[in-house]
Image 1 (cartoon, rainbow, N blue to C red):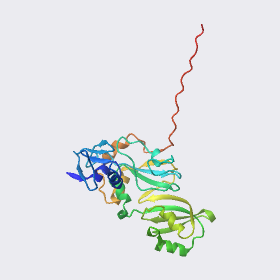
Image 2 (image 1 turned 90 degrees about the horizontal axis):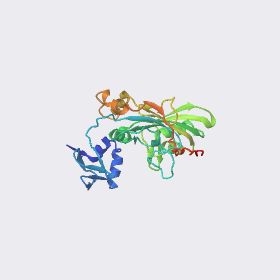
Image 3 (image 1 turned 180 degrees about the vertical axis):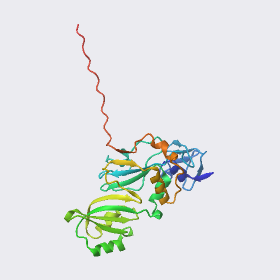
Image 4 (image 1 turned 90 degrees about the vertical axis):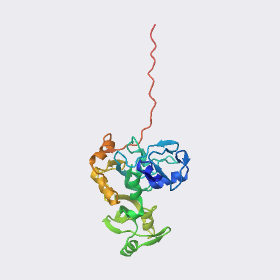
Length: 285
């Protein structure tokens, strides 16, 4: 039984299907010694390598496909590494024994709030795909005057450089002067879309935080840098939202989670300090 290569590699946590497709185009993946091509299929018995490393393929993983809720601080990048040496979200996450964390979309460096990360490439792909129409909610602090005419335009839709966009809803969340907040929702995740929509009305977003992704809400008690693991019931609810079958029993989620605490404050990586050598003491003659 063969499956598309990107689906097999996404299932074992190599990346989302889109990420795997980019790896294929870059020539980083081989099947039985031959360079992989887009559209190729593979069997679990085939020898598939990514960057020269053999990958054990599975039609269905025998461990939990985990989901983390991460409270991203401002100033962190959503890439695995940054050429300028800026901190990334992946530096704070728990280590995995197999697979890797896949970010469900991105937040720009100046945006904080809820991010989902998973080891399930298929789930990540479904959550990011526009056809799933997963609603996102953002808290926005606005500098400038917001009137009903502006709100009406933003609900009906305005033309941006990459096409028409709009908010599903806009709710006044209170505040005065330079500290006035609005909560907005939308179904897309285009680059800087929330900021660009407000800026099209000649007002400025001074703070932006994502507070909800689908049914998952940011815990009000969480602090930037905190992460928590979605429980079994939450994983199943998220899978059903995007049309994936739920896990049959909670036993499927126990293996990967037992080595980690369900919630912690992840501190920044500490620099390694060389151990001091003991001083030599001269013996008296």
